[in-house]
Image (cartoon, rainbow, N blue to C red; front, side, top):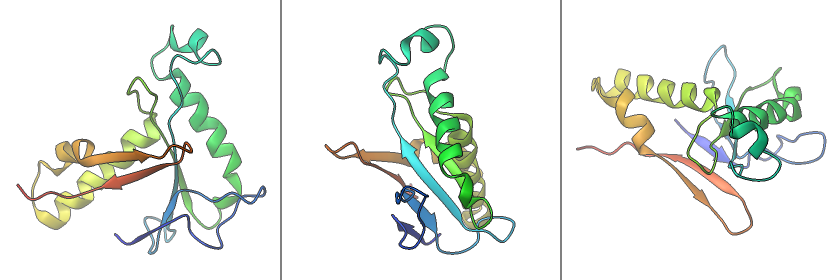
Amino acid sequence: MPATRKPVGLFRSDGKRPDGATQIPWARGKPLAWDVTVPDTYADSHINSTSITARAAANHVATAKSAKYANFTSTHIFVPFVIETSGAWNAQAIELTQEIGRRTTAVTGDPLETIHAPLSTSFHCHPAGKCSLFYEHVQI
């Protein structure tokens, strides 16, 4: 599915842009926009909750991201894609990855794509703290 990294013309009220957006509708006639964040599971700001509840930092950050991008909901489907440094994913990231797998299965006919999707999803983080989400279909 064609997508654009840091889409031009799609801004939050503070001038920041999501990490990416599809160029064609994803669902309900709207394109998908996402923002990838990797919070530190063991940071002082998260340790009280992450020591008790799995995915606590991911869920907290995802909720905050959704609020920051709330103005996009009239034109886009926004998904906060959050993975803690411990490897825990927020629910929306899991659901999106599963949906990518389902859609890939529909195209390729390979029922294992829903299993391969999480294994083929990668993140490239740059020193400035910027991260990009990649999904690569690999023919085996």
